[in-house]
Amino acid sequence: MFPALYSEYTIIGYEDGIVLIKHKRLTGVARTNHIQKGQTLQEMLDEAPNANTSEAIGHVTKFVVGTDWESYTEQLDFYFLANGVKEPKTKKAVLLTNLPVETYQLAKYLVAPAQLKDDAITYDIIVERMQKQLKPERSALVARYEFDNRARNSGESVSHYVATRKHLATECKFGEAMRTECLRDGLVSS
Image 1 (cartoon, rainbow, N blue to C red):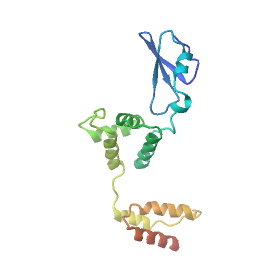
Image 2: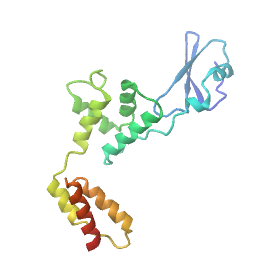
Image 3: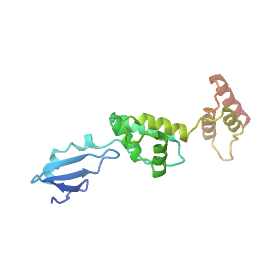
Image 4: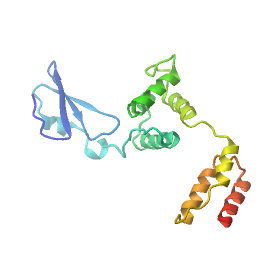
C-alpha cells in the first residue's frame, strides 16, 4: 500500500494491482486517478495535471430549503460555465448530489413515474419542474398589494429600500413606464 504523503490525495482502494486515488481539491466533480502497482505516489502526482488547470473555480453549495431556487440554479449555471462543465449528465449529477434529502425526494416525486437516473430526465427538466414547485407564479394582485404597502423601515438606507421595492416590483407585472412611475412615487411618499 502506498503511504498517503500528500493531504490532497487519499487512497480509496486497492484492487487487481491498481491503487485508486481520490483528489480532494475539486469541488462538485471528483476525479479519480489510477496508478499501476509499483508506481509511487510521487510519480502519480508528477503525472497529474498542474494545480492551475485542475482546481475548480468557485464551489457548489448545498441547496438550503426555503431559499430562492431560481437564484440557486442561476449560480450553479455560472459554476458550470466557469469550470467548462457542459455534459448534461454531469450537470444533473452535481445538482442532485447537492440537494438535501427532502429536496431530492421532491425531485423524485416531480419526475415520477420516471426515475432521476433515467437519461430522459435531464438537468433542465429537473430545474424546470423544481422551479414550478418551489417558486410558483404569484398573483400580480398580491404582489402589487405587498409592493404598495412596503414602507421604509426606520434606520433603513434609501438604497436598501429602493432595491427592495425594485425586487417587489418584478412580480407586479407592471409595464416599464408604470414600474418606473410606481418606484418613483413610492420613494417620494416615503
